[in-house]
Image 1 (cartoon, rainbow, N blue to C red):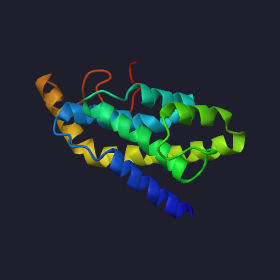
Image 2 (image 1 turned 90 degrees about the horizontal axis):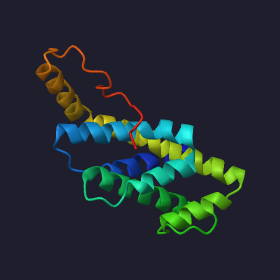
Image 3 (image 1 turned 90 degrees about the vertical axis):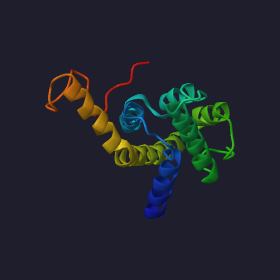
Image 4 (image 1 turned 135 degrees about the horizontal axis):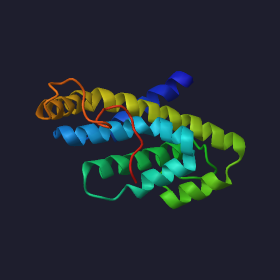
Length: 165
C-alpha cells in the first residue's frame, strides 16, 4: 500500500514538473522553489503552504504554471483518495481550504503526510530535471564574476533558501 502511494506521488510530481524549461536562470528558480516545499510544509503547515501555492498561481510564466499544476495535483489527489470529506477531485482551492479547516486531527495528519511525500518527490524530480541546467547558470555567473567557478556571492547557491514574498 505505502509503495503504491509513493509511486503515485512520484508520478504526480513528474506531471507537475512536466514543463519545458530552457533558460538556466528559470531552471534554477524553479528547482529552488520546488526544493523549498518540504521545509515550507513542515515549518508553516499544510493550510499556509497551500495558500502560498495558490497565491502564486494564475500567471503566465513557467513558475506560475508549475504552482497551478501543483495546486491541481494536491486537490485531485486528496479528492480521488477521499481523504477530506466529500471533496471532489476537481474542487476549487477555496473548497479545499474550507474542508481542510473542518478536518479532524487524524485526517489532517494523514493529508499532511501524503502532501509531504509529494513535496519530497517534487524536490527530487526538480533536482534531477533542472539541476544540470541550474548548475550551468551558477557556473557561468561565477566565471563572469571572476571567481573561476570557486563559489559565488552570498545567497548565490542552489541550496534551498526561503523565497522572498
